[in-house]
Length: 85
Image 1 (cartoon, rainbow, N blue to C red):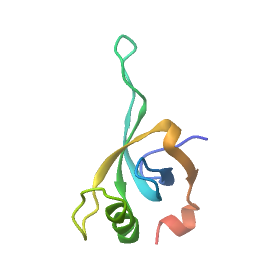
Image 2: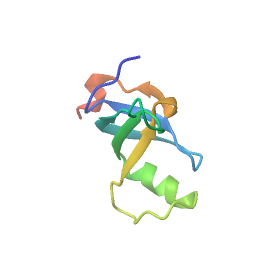
Image 3: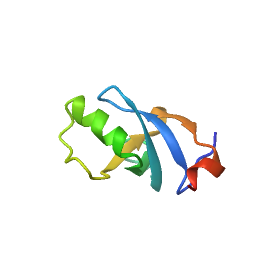
Image 4: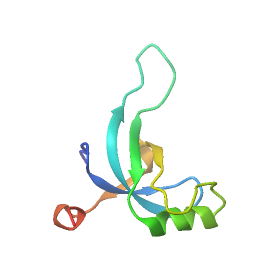
């Protein structure tokens, strides 16, 4: 599936819960260096931040943290009409 900037995507977090993020910037690893392809993204919903806090992630309540998402963590894209609300 193709993803682009500002897509809202469900991702698998390392802490356990699945969360919705908005993709902000594509990161591609250099061919002559180690690393992984992925995205800089922002968590969309407060309830997702709260579920990560309950899982032990040290975020401050009420914030929308910027996170790095590996390509293999992307699960599905949200319906475009719903994502614009």
